[in-house]
Amino acid sequence: MPYPIQRVAVLGAGTMGAAIAAHAANAGLKVDLLDIVPPGAQGKERNSIVKAGFERMLKAKPPALMEQSLAENIRLGNFEDDFERLKEADWIMEAIIERLEPKQELMARIERVAKEKAIISTNTSGIPIAKIVEGRSEAFKRRFLGTHFFNPPRYLKLLEIIPTTDTDPEVVEYMRTFGERVLGKGVVIAKDTPNFIGNRVGSYSGMQAMNYALNNGYGIEEIDAITGPLIGRPNTATFRLADQVGLDIMVGVAQNLYELIPEDQFREELLPHEVLLRMVKANLLGNKTGSGFYKRVQRAGKTVFDVLDLETFEYRPAQNPKLPIVQTAQKQGDLGARLRFLVSKADEDRDARYIRDTLMHSLMYAAWRAAEIAHSLLDIDHAMEWGFGH
Image 1: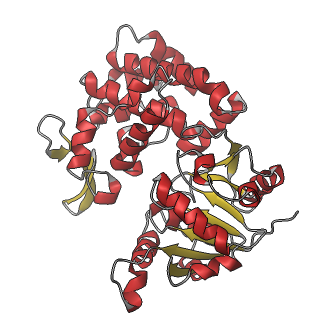
Image 2 (image 1 turned 90 degrees about the vertical axis):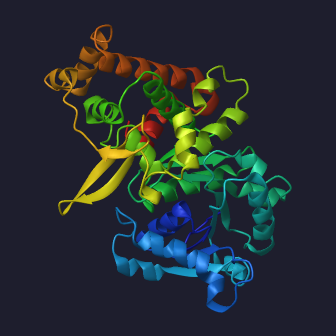
Image 3 (image 1 turned 90 degrees about the horizontal axis):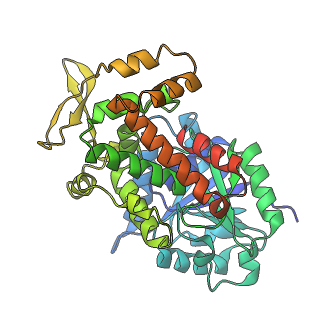
């Protein structure tokens, strides 16, 4: 049965929902972007939430749209006045708050209006896919699956597709092809396990790396100097990546994952360090609030970054640390040679020790969980490369 996708409906205009709508618009698709109505809102104010999300997307850096004119492909609306538009959609994707009950309630509403051949998906980053469609008809379940994009969707290649045991294999294959050919994604088929592949390994690796640093007196700039391109990772490294993702998101995902995997013997590494909890409480969430581990400031007419001093909890000018082990490692040649050199120096240099220990934990965890979360080791490699640049 063909599932030609021409019109997409994205439900939820938060950071991810609006950015996914933009990515679909980039691909030439017509998009309806809907969100809730504020309590008591009248007239144009009924679309104020979706409009705010849309306008944030238009101002996003890096840009979510290939060109601003593509915004014309996106039609705004709300869940009360415009829900009937879903009858036109070939693909309906949910991207609302990360709580099971609201998602289940929304699926019940979608089932009442979606056309027979519409594909329905969720962008949840970790809630079990099968639970989201509990109580829905068998016909609905056959065309439902997870489509988990990584942020920002235009720039991160990974798209995890997560079928349930009820999903029609034809729907899975269609969405794989659509994701690759139309959306330009690297698609990985993940098992319906907590946080799937990328965020299962990535959450563990990220929290373990930050906890190790914070527990052992490493500096923020120091860690970012040794965990970026030196070891084959993006310039965002560790703490800049946390700012990009959002500390509230990172902490929330880790805490939720902890509760979902009681049998995982390594789950204690997911418990956030007290520094992270303090930052979330203080609304130091990263790029979206303007302050996180780093803070962008204007100084002498230039945009520069200050860094959070972990002792005073005040910001100070960020430094570019000159680490002898880094300078020596950079002379070793390719990535493999650099890593072998750093591991060989782990017993005598604290920065080399950090790299060895955190890489060892990450690789060990991925290997330990491989059969549970993925269909192949290559899928784990692709998820970490395409979703995290690792």
